[in-house]
Amino acid sequence: MMHFVAAAGPHISIKAETLFSIGGVPITNSHLLGTLGVIVLVWLLFQARAVALGKKPANFATRLITWTFEGLYSTVKQVIPDEAWAKKVAPVAITIFFFVIAQYWMGILPIVGPITIGEHATPLFRPFVADLNMTFALALVTIVAAQIYAFKYMGFRGNMGRYFINPLKDPIMAFVGILELVAEFSRLLGLSFRLFGNVLAGEVLLIMIAYLTQFVSPLALQPFYLFELFIGGIQAYIFFMLTVVFISLGLSHHGDEAHDDVHSPSLHKTVESET
Amino acid sequence: MEYLTIQLVTVATAEPAGDLFSSIGVNWTLLGLQTVAFLLLLFILKKFVYPPLAAMLDKRDEAVKASADAAMEAEKHAAEAEARTAELLDEAKREAADIVATAKEEASKTAEDVARKAEAKADALLANARDELAKDVASAKKALASETVGLVAEASGKLLGGKIDATKDAELIAKALKESQ
Image (cartoon, chains in turn yellow, red):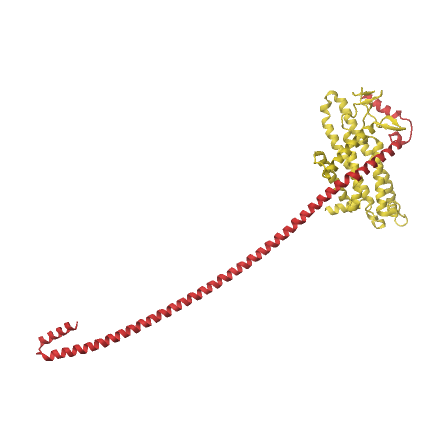
């Protein structure tokens, strides 16, 4: 049974809620909105592709996508000075940006929340990035991609040399290496929980404003919608930027000779070139 | 608000006791499937969408760079042309100054020649005039002398032919003079 009005009180859940199962795999309310978001995103990006190939005239949406792509692409090139590696890294980071912003903004649609299902009034739609599984998956992709690129760039020994240093030769750097290893796991958690927390907080904010203002909510929600649009862009850019920086860390070490510059040498290069 | 608090507490406590991740909603199966779904999206976009967009931007960057190079080259050519023009202008000024100086010198020389020639011609004319005058004076003198002799002879003849007294003499002289005129 599907309902189109809000329940007696606001429905807030930290987890995405299972609506049904397919072959034993639970399908949650975040999956429905996520699928819708991916369809919209792919359609828009293919429109931009058609414009780039000269098959269609440009419009506002395609110009916005091309402009955003250009900005992100040049940011990747600035952070990773080696252009060949920048071109390899750019697709992962740019896809993360477009995915996060599309899913975040989908969460602002008015269908999210009011349409409920079942006797517990479970919302039919939930932002995909308000599902910890998704943010964790994105963080996992980032960290694993950073390791894969680091292995390709420095080799197995070179990459392991970032974390495991002989304590008899250099005890301080051996300790720093262990900290680096711990930092990799903390980055995984930091990335996933930061995005999840922001989206969930945004959702809770919108639900509470709508609940408290009742019939005035169409007016009262406007500034909060704008705020959420802004925060969505900021969160997507933060995730994108951190992805590029984490990957660039693995592309800026050169084995033992770079031990004095372990934190973000590629960023140092960028800052030096800019100054 | 009380309802909300109760609901949140219910959500937090109603979950069966599991590991930390499952208690906050992490389902490893879903996580794996969603990771694969994201990688599939990445593959599709990397294969079909990003290459044309990147190619378009690279092409535009190359066009901008080519235009900038062309502008720089044109600027360089313009500077060279300007320098060449200035050089030609200097050369032309120098040549014009030379021409003016030569013309002045030649004009001055011509003027001197003309003045010298005019002076010589004037001297020659003056000398001729003097010669002519001297000749005229000499011939006049000669004519006068011969006429005077004739007159004197005539006067003497007449004088000697008549009675000479003071009155007669005066008349004769006056007559002679009158006749001589």
